[in-house]
Image 1 (cartoon, rainbow, N blue to C red):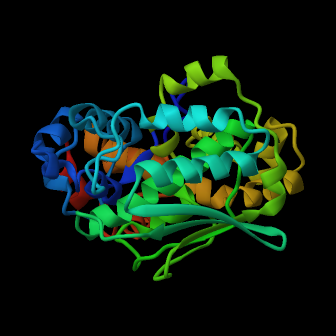
Image 2: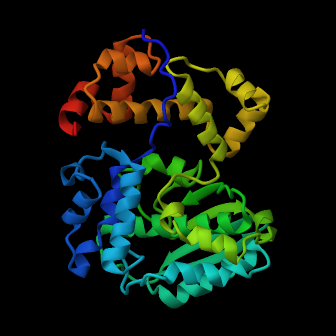
Length: 346
């Protein structure tokens, strides 16, 4: 087994190719060439048809911004009329002066009703639970991948903006989606909520009603900084209530090939193991899930971008032997690492 690799940068997060298929679904409606945009962002078009493919978040974010700019449409050509660039900025400005989250969400819903004909947003209360409801008002002018992405994107945008306004994570308890499970449904736990279901009549995201009373803490100065990267910065990455999970991921990455225990990670974070377990659970995660996600992303990166031998990759990821790595990689992607490398090596 090889020794620890010192001073390694954090492993880049990756996203499933299903999100890429969705984001380009409406591009051709505007007369633009989706293949050219994908290649400009460094994403091979040949990978679109393989549900096991993953790409770096940075390339996905680049594609996100490129489509917005080329189409002059922050809705990616998915809706019956474009959301011209600047739509998101004015959405933010409309919510910025709200006193609390409930008022901010109400303003967001009313603003979207003005600019968006296809989907309608509403916030409701049911006892101790708040519901963010997104209903389809008319058929979208794109196919099913585009329709799926439209719901995904709108939920992430509203949720990300809400969390930014109150300056704290806002965990969703569960989300019901109004379509069958898409090919990338396994990603939903990481992107949206720890519990997700499908084939609902409308999208319903549940979260504690107490959150609605949270004060809006942002101001104009904060907004200028925020807008430099938004909306891509709040809609392309994984759940923003997973800040602790990211710190744990970074510590696990730095320790490889050693496998740190919950107690060891807790010590590094100055937490008790019980507190760390509970807080990760609150974020919809666990040490095991974070470790497996890190190993998977590193394995994909090293297989596709380096010529590192499989045995060395297995050792650097902390596997006891190459066969254990093979079994894990097959469970992650549905195929062995050697075949995956032969198909996706760049």
